[in-house]
Image: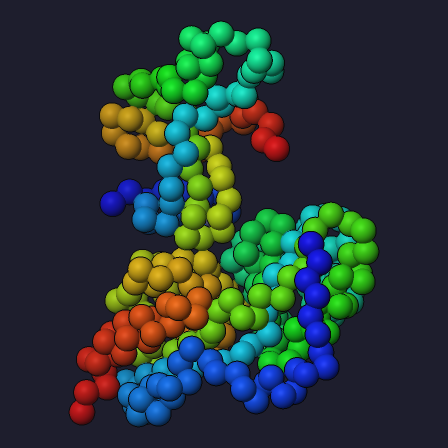
Length: 90
Length: 208
Ligand SMILES: [Zn+2]
């Protein structure tokens, strides 16, 4: 069982969270201008690094807030994202 | 969001209400034990619960605080007030105002007037959850069997709350006293499950 740090609630068990996939996948500025290949890339293709990976998680059973965290896919070590790597979230 | 409630027949309706654990009142009361290793379980039905969303740094938040006479806690998982009149932190812009039965309409009206046209929402969610009260010297040990939070006083004290899992049920857990005493606010359809789970966890202390 992983312990995941919610930025609001602190360390909680993995079962309280749901996974939201790769972070910083921006919605295309002009979706209609994309051809099928580019649209498919946006929808389905994600990075799959061995090592640090910025991910979205949601604290479903707790405060229900989404946040971004950085997980090492080889060790499951997690850390907060550096402020410089952050993007504004609506 | 606008929620319209009619008050005219509320007294007649109140007499017909039936809380999720009404049929198990005697069973829960009989399961409790007193003494140094005591623990008690019961339902606190029909607490007034109002979900409040407002930007924490806005004039609207200050207005709501003034209208309700309650400070909205800005620190995560904290409670202001006491068990008769409280605001629980649910999120950075979300709180649960809890008061005794019959107060929801007044709280909604006061908060909505104070918010005026500011972004946010005030919704009576009293029917969403019922409340189980677990109290007694061994209540923390009972709860620790079915909840992964650190409930030791160094980490969780009276005046703190947490939205978490107890067994497989989502609850708002709120420590209301140092005895210790806890309120577990749970959706009605999970109330039987949670009562069964807690009775089972209590058995070690209550079997005579
Ligand atoms: Zn959280």
